[in-house]
Length: 372
Image: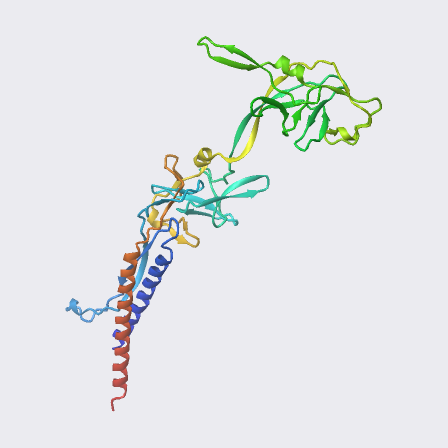
């Protein structure tokens, strides 16, 4: 009776552990990149009742020996997010928490976060995603090539510009650009203010139209004429520009009337500048994201937050430079909900059977104790 009691108790404890694994799988059925666990049970030690009768050996129940990962790929879903990544292989992403501990994960739902003067790639938990060399990933942004025209003002002369509010300014900064203004092109500053001619009108860009070998019209900017159209102005005698800001002086603050200068403006010099935009350079970012593999993925240990821990059995992770990465996709959980429901029913029935055995053994023990 005692053997039945303790064997059934061991079975109840084992099935409770199995139920916990099943419940954890069901709870993570929608967790990105989650790998389901499968409980594995083993028999407890047998007691040899008689050496000559091995079939008389008495068992003492079961216990949960281990849990195994189900490494099947759960399929991919396109959520339309450019920072979503999935791995159609046996690889892992590597992330690092704020305490400096590294983990492996299959969860590729990434985000960006500001770190000082740059942006870095992180996951939903705030862990930093690592590149192939184990370093944080600084998010690359696209650059645009921007051509500007550098005009040199004559000595003691100023250019005049006007903003969209109609406020006029004097400046000696001749870093101008061309902009399309409907039917024609006009000259503007890098801030979008219109450059004025000697009569106070917007400077219209002149073009020379030429025919190529096939008879097609080809328009080229006439830079000499453009420079001649730019107005140059001289200050009134004794005028003070101390109230200006960054070489940008309001005309309304100047005492006296400006004089139009006849000084010639040289043809502009072309300057090419690279401007960093706010658009992420996704092809470069995709190449930077590290993918790692381990010699024995069955030896990994599961940790919180959808992390996997490297162990001696798994071996050290190594970068896999040839592994594919799917952008815009996330890997679904490997949990088979139908199978987990079956496992839950099996565990419940087994637990109930063991509980009935415990109850029966206890009742038999009470009967024996009450015998006179």
